[in-house]
Image (spheres, rainbow, N blue to C red):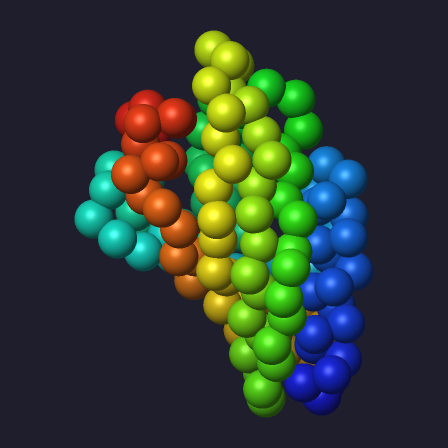
Length: 134
């Protein structure tokens, strides 16, 4: 796929995420999908494989976020197999705290599937609003 097609795939995914619908995101993940949260916080680590993301990371987030997780993208930049997405969350924790983190996501896409995601965010905010991961 071209950089333009890769960017359009991410635009569609984030249009759904803005509505709290994560299905297109999950459906686009390759089985080998790898998600890395950068930094040195307790949330910083790498999940190898779609099943690790679905079985470990997503349940940890859903346990802390009240309702559907919403993320709104503001900018997409694509070159080759990489798409960079700037976004902001609009969420509340189950104990009532706002969790509106700012994100820079770097996706690697091949054949219409998401292979890799490197996430840059305010890890201090994640720790203070979400607490420690399980």
